[in-house]
Length: 556
Image 1 (spheres, rainbow, N blue to C red):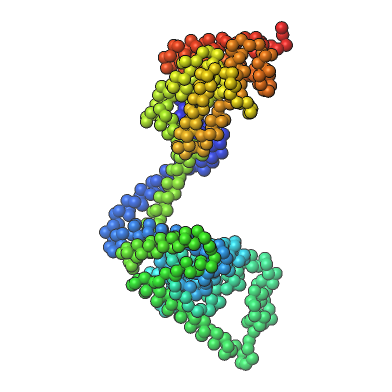
Image 2: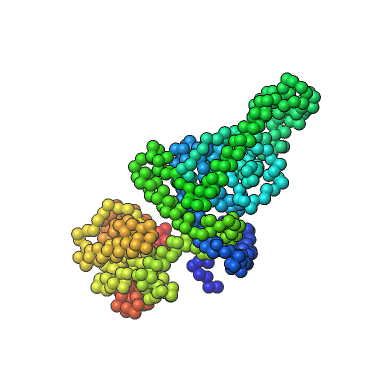
């Protein structure tokens, strides 16, 4: 059965868990379903082009908004890393523009910070300590219609939707990646009117509240409900006076709350009007970060803020930015592009590019193509066929030696001595002996040059290879002199005196050398070099003698 390299990588131990997970999660079926749905969405979007008058550039506008959202998140995460409100960027009363089309139906909607991230991250029921969110009051679009669930909540709780000045507003938890931009406008507001932790906690889960409060739901005297979570111990009690009358303080507090809501709504409507005309001023985040970061980070932060300002300017040039039905068109594009990104991710997971070893494989293949082992059609060339014959040591070095012809002028004893540098693995401090033939010393130096060149080629193609280390690891000359003397007929006891290497290591090296000689002989046959072929046979015969190739050391 023919199997590609990619197929072998998929069946390798390192990819077993990943491939099994892909199969068990039915990703191929999800990809097919997602591709079909995406095709239908693209067709519907193209057919509805006549209904997008004034918003023809909505797709380009969507991608421009994504760039701004990404830059804004990067900058805010950077300044919030020092704690607090990010140098006042997200302090209470700060006007923001937020975009959360699929989650809340908002696109460049004005909002005001009620709780900064440092306080919003305070652990509580329903809040898992998310440090990347802030609580805001948001102006809903003019076309917004509230749901029954939202209208049943009370002012001061998350997801509450209210109405004032003929417009709806909502209390939402906004993530950093939903903040389009931070304006320079800041108002003084009473945030407790719109949001407080007690109301938030009580509204998240009635069941959890009942578990935490053993008196939950119990009736007090005269049928009044106990409110354990209320900070006011006299909450719910009648003021002195006529039965059923309302105190003047309650009336005053209620009127102040109404006035606070109307004031905040006027701030939000004004921000919406300014953005739709000339564009609201952006807060210079560099001023918020100047006391937090030093050195190169200041320059990098400044460059990032400049890019965001440029992206905001590009975003405001699109006609869709000022379209009255922007939210509807934007939501269609976001749904389509979100599905496209998921389909792309699934296609990547199921492709060869997701394999952990695939980048390394591509780099090595590119390196082999550069050196002539494989052509542009991934067909194995002559060099590649020669390299396939070598399995005992580094095949690339042997192949380059054969094609360079550096073994042709050597005698069989010298050839086998040079090849021992590819077999021997132990580290020794012994260098080249002065008694060796000059031709052999020259060939060993050529081998080092070849190894360094191969290491450099691999490094140039992105592989984590150091040329000098590659040469030192692939070539060890500790037994060159020993093997040369052995091939010349010197007794084993005499060659052991030439080195400190253990006798067993010498025997193992010479035994493996015989196998390498046969592989180089086959290389000579592939390239059509009869002279080298005969020399390799003679080299193999020169080392196959005496105790090294005895069938057993215990049988005479």
